Every structure is written in C-alpha cells, then in structure tokens.
Image 1 (cartoon, helix red, strand yellow):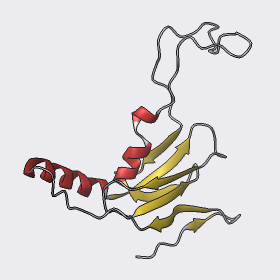
Image 2 (cartoon, helix red, strand yellow; image 1 turned 30 degrees about the horizontal axis):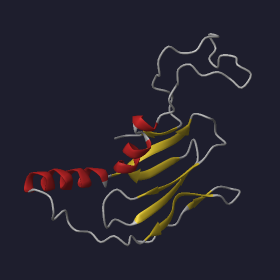
Image 3 (cartoon, helix red, strand yellow; image 1 turned 90 degrees about the vertical axis):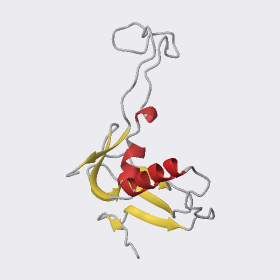
Image 4 (cartoon, rainbow, N blue to C red; image 1 turned 90 degrees about the horizontal axis):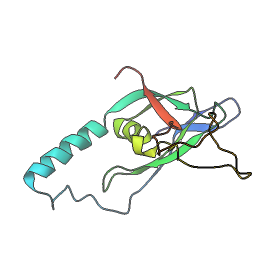
Length: 143
C-alpha cells in the first residue's frame, strides 16, 4: 500500500509522511501464555483500527507534532506529522498514545520564577503536584 502524504498550500507535508521497515521481527507473541497471547492479539486488533481524529495543540495553531508510531514488534515504523485543526485517519493505538494522561504537562508545587516570585496566578506556590494540562490531543470524530 502506497500512501501519499497530504500537503498544505505552502507545501508542508502532514499526515503519514513516512513508513520505515522495522528491524525487529514479528514473533507472533510466541513467548506469552495462551491467556496473555489472546489478550494482546485482541488489543493489537483494536489498536490497528483506523479512526478519524482531529489534532489539537494547547499552545496554538502554529505548533506541530511529528511522531513515530510502532506499537508492536515487527510492525512498520510510521512517521506522522500533525497540524492543529486538521482531520486525520489514524490507527486507534496512535490516538491512545498521543492522548495518554501520563504525558500531560505536570503542575509542580513550590516553584518560583528566576527572580524569586511565585509562578502561578494566585501569587503562591501550589501545595502539592497536580495533573497538568494536555499539550497534544487527537479528538475523536465518529468513533
């Protein structure tokens, strides 16, 4: 299957811009127990479903995300380039990876600016670390 990347009016490529061969061979999950093998095969099937999603970036429309994606051993390495506000057809596993909550920007407690002033708007440091805002997000459209 040959995929032609999308281009903006200025010539910037986006969407799936490259596919690389993976040097790791697919082992078909041979070393797993039958129960785990069935579970991971089901997950792989779910992750490979193609879904529509719109890319958003919390820093604005000028930001971009270029991300390699390879979820399982032996899968080709796909290089994706996203532009905010554009809709893409991507694997569901990539959506889950981009939206992973552990990758959110954390709000740290007790931080001060270089001149010693508190960073947050309330003029006092946070009492404890908090889950922060997202930077990159793929918003589902119709799945």
